[in-house]
Length: 430
Ligand code: AMP
Ligand code: GLY
Image 1 (cartoon, rainbow, N blue to C red):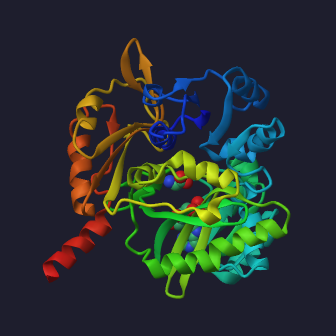
Image 2 (cartoon, rainbow, N blue to C red):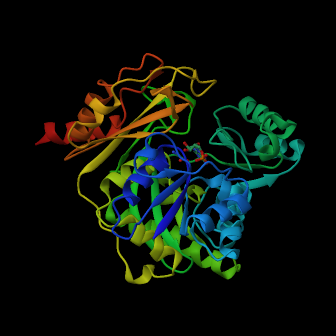
Image 3 (cartoon, rainbow, N blue to C red):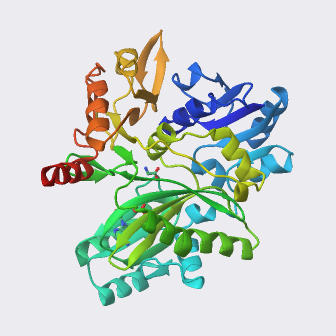
């Protein structure tokens, strides 16, 4: 079968890498893709916001299955338009993608169906939001309702910060996304990312991951799209996974079905593991980036078979198997990120790095210029390694990072630090 993958970041390179190994695949295409993806796929020069152009490309290239990587095309209804054209697609409908597209939508769903999450209220005007904040007090969390590329959340430790966040969002500082806000209670605990494949009716637990959202070592500095991740998340024990499935994921699928908007695709739950158990921070309707990179390193089964199972409603009879090895990924970002990243700087040594055992280098924001690989985005490479322990995977990933010669970029040097510390404490104990 010929498959079209939509997207061009590190997540999509990891998906392309896994899809290209499938015995079911004839030819993989990718729009827009990147130079790493180009090694395993034909790049399609189409505008993915132009759904008619995507459909025409599929018809011209006998593509019968489309896999959508990022959220924006899903929220824009690409899956609906492909389905209407008779092309199978992995990724939720526009209505189901509201789980990511509107935080207020998801919070209301949680309230209606008793899914554990932080207490909250929704607002479209600043004064009522501020009154509520003054009443509840800090710490408190202010979120833009719509898609904001990971920048729509202010965890306010003081009342002043929270009030300023409301002003910033409602006054248009976040564009459309901030026209409505959710104000919610501050939760404490350990965060984890949980992924479940869904076919509208059945959810199949995939794997867990932990990411590092802050730009600086020790989890300091501004938030980013993610500077690194590892899988599995030690906090997600088997019992915690089962509670998450029973208390959060399955009720969500049932609720979406009851509303007439069943969810098919991958449900990415951002969780806070609190003293009372797992609570939902937010949903995404797609794989995480860079969490996808570590998931794909650990996946033993054929990805294309699993994604088709989700689309065809076959998950009840399927399972997903994972390597026991830990996978860890380090994001290399262009200087300036998460502000304005420097573009066009020369990158050398990627081939040397990926030649190391147990290492894959996934391209995120790269482009070829006169035969040279240069930076073309904020997050540029995701250097991914597996190992028997987090400590080993981390050592391998950084050995690979150190073979990459790129003065125009930087990375965190401590991805996985909590888990490495845990392993060290356990080792000292024995
Ligand atoms: P989100 O974009 O909703 O995942 O939020 C980004 C980050 O803000 C999360 O990964 C958490 O670290 C933090 N956060 C969001 N909501 C809460 C909350 N209710 N309590 C504490 N931290 C939160
Ligand atoms: N790394 C977080 C995300 O993909 O949303």
